[in-house]
Image (cartoon, rainbow, N blue to C red; front, side, top):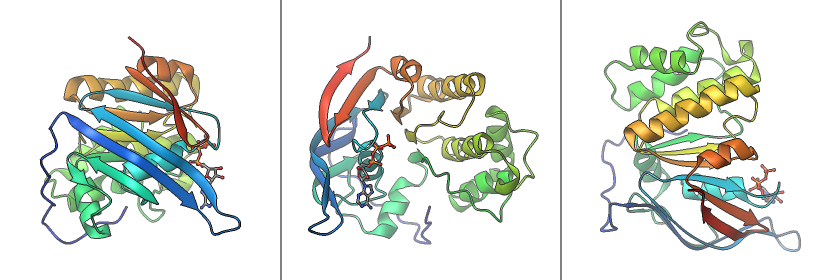
Length: 243
Ligand SMILES: Nc1ncnc2c1ncn2[C@@H]1O[C@H](COP(=O)(O)OP(=O)(O)OP(=O)(O)O)[C@@H](O)[C@H]1O
């Protein structure tokens, strides 16, 4: 994830505090004609602070693409995205990076760990860059929380896929973000480890009031969320509360 040297975060606009994500008529097309693909076809979605949302849908329905737009990692072809009151479509790359820092945690399917850094450094260095004084102690405690206290000095290549996934989760959780995006966070984990990671995500959600937005194919994980949004062929085909 890029880090900008500029210390000035963009000021939020006047959107109500309780709305964390507001997407309006979001569209995404990729590729060029005649091979252009319509990935998202007009998504309207509002998420309020403290919600836990599971995003479901068949493979290829656009879940990861939608998350990338909502997290400010990609730009839509049309429509608007406001996150924490900030107009993500209008921000340049540097300001987007600053806007995400500390506020938004992201766990992607590809973990994007830096291969030349140990597990501890992968978690601690972004914290340091964000100005955290006790970055290494905090990183060690986050890695301990995901069951990797014994792997601090291992490099990504020395870790299993599931261990790398847990480093990525620790890195996303370490800044205590108010909004956490996770793309199949338990996808590479055995049932027991996956369940422990889910407990951790939901504990942060409850204790810190963090908003959770999780892509999953796991019905148990979806059922623990307060709301289930289903995508089908680039549209929202269902949006329901689970309570
Ligand atoms: N760069 C690209 N160019 C063209 N098509 C793309 C590109 N990236 C993704 N797609 C297509 O966009 C569609 C949606 O992909 P996306 O990864 O968002 O789906 P998904 O619902 O997350 O799938 P999965 O559950 O398999 O991870 C897929 O059909 C995919 O092939």
